[in-house]
Image 1: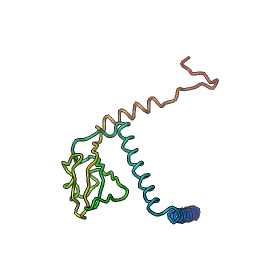
Image 2: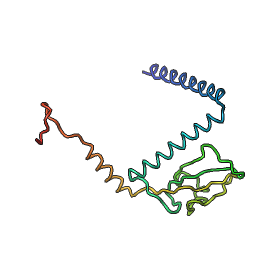
Image 3: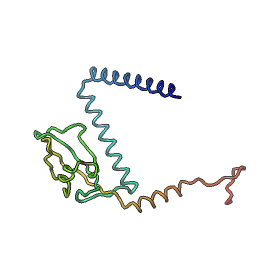
Amino acid sequence: MRNGLLDRMARAEARLEDMIKTVQAVARVVGNDEVVAELAAGARQEMTEAVTQGLREGRLQPGDVVAKTSLIVGQEALKDGRVLHPGRFQVFTNELTAEHQALFSGKKVGEKIDLPNGSVVTVQEIYDPSDPTVKKSAAAKKRRRAKPEPVEPNGNSPRN
């Protein structure tokens, strides 16, 4: 068992090394800036889709000000205005250090925050987790709807 796991890990590592070489080759051919821009665009798209799904499923709701459990969506830039990769961040307030929580607390969309590292963050969106009882009841309804109708061996529904 252990050797099998080690073998699979070694094969995965070899595939990862091959993928890194492939990305490096593509960067040499089309240019590093284009590859970085494409990776950043993909990361931003994934983050946006995660928020959209949270809203659709009722796990998130738009917020007015940054609170203890808010999801903050923002953009970090250098003082000269150059946006830092990937151009969008998403973080729950309670995942920040106490120092950063204090900086973000009470901020509204559009406000800028000077970070200790010298960069500037603009709060672009704020979301609050929905009431957990709402999440549970919505999830339970979805599970109830998703249950397949029982079928007898002859293919007929027992309700017919």
